[in-house]
Amino acid sequence: MKNTTLLLGVSLLPFIIACSSGEDKGSKGSNNYNPNGATITLPSSYTPDTGQLLGAQCAQCHGTNGVSVNKWDSIVGEDNLHKEMFEYENTHIMTAQARGYTPEEINNIEIWVQTLSQ
Amino acid sequence: MKTNSRRDFIKLMGLGSLASVSPTLLNGATDKTPHIVVVGGGFSGITCAKYLKMWGGSSIKVTVIEPSKTYVSPILSNLVLNGQKSTTDLSFTYDKSSSKYELNMLYKQVSNIDKQNRTITLDDSQVINYDKLVLAAGIDFEQVNSYDYNKVPHAWQSGTQINILKQQIDSMKNGDTFVMSIPPVPYRCPPGPYERACVVADYLKNTKGYANCKVLVLDANAKIIVEENTFTAAFAKHGVEYRPNSSVTAVDDTTKSVTYSNGATEHILSATVLNIIPKQKAAPIVFNAGLTSANWAPVNPLSYESVLFDNIHIIGDSQGTSQPKAGHIGNSEAKVCADAILRKLNGIALYSAPKTNSACYSPTSKNEASWLSAVYKYDTNTQSMILAHKGSGVSTTKHYTDMFMWSGNLFADTFA
Image (tube, rainbow over all chains, first blue to last red; front, side):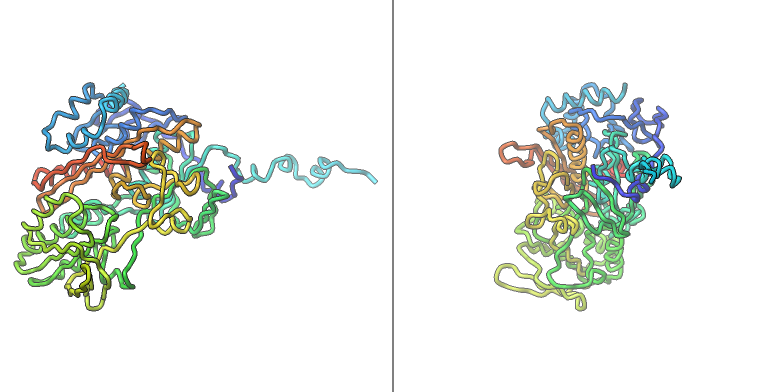
């Protein structure tokens, strides 16, 4: 990486590392990744996780890390995700979305959402 | 003559231990933590920044460059036109999320990108170094001729524009005409123009009580491009006149008239309110950086890295895959991009089968909405994202309520 300028050094002011309170503030999921609290624990390194990547695609409708901000379902800790995703009628938006994923992908997402409640 | 060593000279000059330190360290800038810069704080940009930090944590530094401290969502903005929402309701700031996810926010414009040296110059002359750059700057417009957006608003970026259009609609009287034009694909938010026409028609007739207003749609495309049955029915219900194959060739912002052609013939229409949605292309920053082909930025769908230059990723409306352009799918792409950047920084192979999705609820009146859904998968033969499955739902009052559940979680996932 090229040498940075003085201005860059100033602009990259160190932030205080946020510490997770572990509190859920009323939403499901007791892990450190509850995004609806004021703070969140960030990792110190990146670990690739297929279920996490695929499951992140659920967040648009079900909330970050599976924690919904409204009456639509949270998916934290779902232990029969395939059944859940296909429980609605054929004309339902969840069914339309679910049909875009393979059983293997849904299994991977389920493994990940299980970790969210640990 | 006494020979002084360099060390003796330094001691003599009183510089002490400072002199043994390189200029780089004096600037406090030897941090080797990879620095990712994201330009643009909309649905794709800020989601990318958030997920980079959520997944990469302290192993990376993330800076977001966004000129405005407030983002006004185009999603749900047609509900501003019928008075059900305000732009304040749809405004988001970055304070909480930037603090929570340790995002360095720079509320500046980019004036230049030096791709070779991996630096960005801001409009205040600050120079920022990056290891990876993400451009998420949205769309730009092509006018058919020069005209004033304050008089003939596109309202296809929210905030001021949508309020101008709202004021114009609210000034309409019974018997007045609202003419909207739809550009050729691809454009941001495929169902958006059709839903706007329906919402405006319903508002004029059923909220304002005007029985004789006319709502007319000029569509450059050959037919309604999404939810054709739904919008055909909604147009019939709300009395919207629809003219396909109608390409705008001239706009006069003084007379509020539009010239359009459908094949060989040209026609001129006058309107009380003229809403021309111009032809769209990638944001200027992407063109200026030499990252476009035709009007969009070609990228690798596994990472959104430009195929024209390494270490620069383009997500959201500006990128040139065939995926639709919209906030929901921009948020979706951002996650694939964030993961790909983190893999590259860690020497891990890209995930070979990413999925993205699009979903959108469209209000068609003050109490009904339809929806569409699509999931995309990577096709190794064409090296592109192709449809895995799609679906849509007709206008109902239940879907109108669901619309706020969908958008609520999308907004939170993006901005919170």
